[in-house]
Amino acid sequence: MFQRFRRTRLNTHLRSLVRETSVSVNDFIYPLFVRSGEKIKTEVSSMPGVFQMSIDEVLKECEELKKLGLYSIILFGIPDVKDSIGSDSLCEHGIIAKAIRAIKEAHPEMFVVTDLCFCEYTDHGHCGIIDEKNQTVNNDATLKISAQQAIVHAKAGADMIAPSGMMDGIITTLREALDGAGYENLPIMSYSTKFASGYYGPFREVAESTPSFGDRASYQMDPANRREAIAESISDEAQGADILMVKPALAYLDIVREIKDATSLPMAVYNVSGEYAMIKFAGMQGLIDYDRVVMETMVSFKRAGADIIISYHAKEVAKMLQK
Image 1 (cartoon, helix red, strand yellow):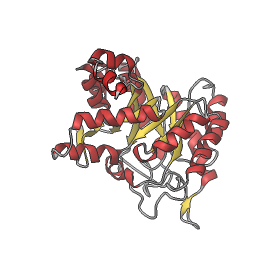
Image 2: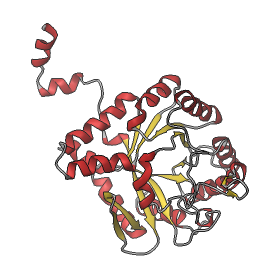
Image 3: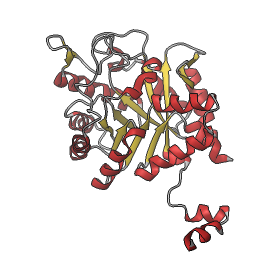
């Protein structure tokens, strides 16, 4: 009774002073999807407010982000032509390399993270080279072209590499390749615990990366495996990752907390497309207090131990914070 009485006497300013967990615009990385062409800004039906954009539109978007105090982005590329090995991602004239150069020239203060994977670039939608015999990704062959892709990103001016393909040994491979090419100080944010989740559906629409056969369960984490999930992140730390990540976020906050307690590295969460869409459509239907639920969700990520939040809500959160 006494404790409850004391809390009622705290005014709004004092509550903010003693609040244990806070959210800032500096916590966020905003995802952007870039494709070839000009004056293209196509909204994704399953993710209202999220767009596929041509490079000129991405540059305008960066200007808007800066006005909101958001200076960190993660880029996903959608090439015009896809093939079995994702050749566009291995080319210095590919969509991602061109986008990085354009952004760094127009907005040098933007911190550009690049998603390093092959699912957006392959005609089969999987995250690497397919072993035709087993109809799954060939881990070692994919590591070789992942190193090649990382060098392309680094040369174009990326500020951080974020490998999302979850191949065994990917962090060691990229660290050695980047160091050998003179990019010793380029950090790697590992998708270190990435689950084979049902929350990714809308992303596959915007990135045009739905697998043409099978699924990705053979190289992503089983959602039921807590100990294995933690071990994967700890392994990536040992291989040289600079930042660890849990993806998705909402259903795995227990994993975020356990990894945070087991490592000294910064922790990121990816607030994925399905999580975004559920809250977005619930808000559009008037089923929830949208702004309140969004902010409550962001606080839950920070409270669980996230230092960085990759989220499609980032612009909305920045506007809420400005109020």
